[in-house]
Image 1 (cartoon, rainbow, N blue to C red):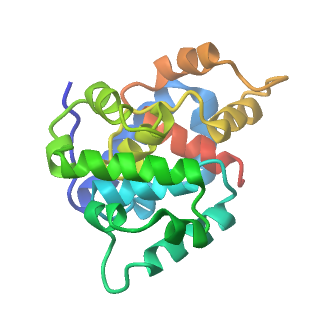
Image 2: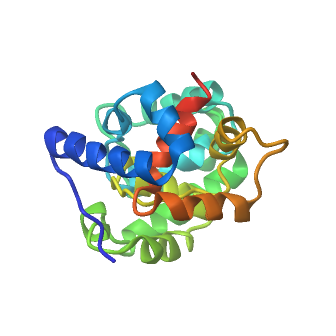
Length: 215
């Protein structure tokens, strides 16, 4: 099923209102959290850049603390002053140079595989917008180092898809454990079962559960 795309802040805010009203009705416990947190501000977290910029950033952030990842990503960008690095830029950058700014050897392999696929015709973000979520996940997880979770973050924070449930996300599972007073982190099946109540707004529910860890 094609997802709705919202190009301006007003329509996003209205869509978020529709989503939160639905979630309050379908899940009273989550509804209490929504009342506590207030309006959904997911649009403030939307990322910029093309597909290569988005996925290269995701690769560099894998398995690192936010601070360490941000430092390495910043140094990586500084290798290409005046513009955002393209796939060809990365393919033309010696591995030793990437290593000097903190990119690990496996991630160099991942970046180069991504760059090679972009050069050889990986769809652009504009082309991805007309594809459904599962097709995008199937396509992009063919890139080395890109797993389902990474593509789900792209769907949420770059393509503005409203019904994404990242069942393996640790923050989401921690939010569920806290909100629903569970003894341990929920299993993937438990997350999926709860997610049935939230469809077609699993992304918005996920955003509130992430926020619950800050409340």
